[in-house]
Image: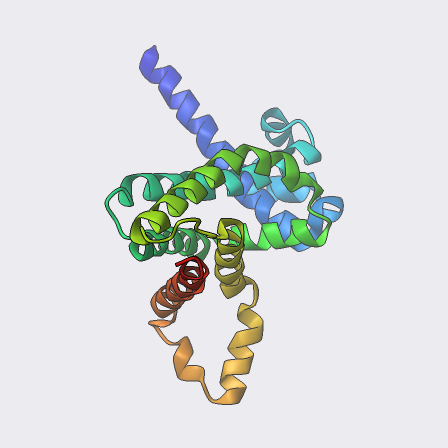
Length: 224
């Protein structure tokens, strides 16, 4: 009986994930207003009744689709940052953070597309979700501030500008994917197409990390 119950639970979880994957694609293409539940059911390969069994209406499904994006990002970053940075330097900790962030966006292009669509529609649905992520952001900011202070013990009153550092990281990471159509064409026209070859993402990770590290340290050194 327990095995049968476990199988049912796993089956329902698989169905929900199929629906969320299909929903993200439909919402990316058509937005919340233009998306159709029947189209989502067709994409997921299920009937509409089963879709409504798991998600009561389109607005609920949209919120869940956004939540799945933010939760996946937060969980991955939390796990990697929490376990991997305890004895790491400031720059290595930043690299872990950037690596994790970019890996999940690289492997889940729907995450970028859905977030961009929501932001273009005003971003109202993101607010309640982001409130839940705030503790993770605070934890990362606090850890980075401690690491900077430890690396620069002569600094009496470090002005680490952590919010700006976090904003810069998010802008540089997300920009790599949001602006891909633009810089791909630009690099090609400008004769830099070799930059876009296989090592582009690893090189981009290292470059973003170096920029963040070098941009923050001078602000500390002003107090020496």
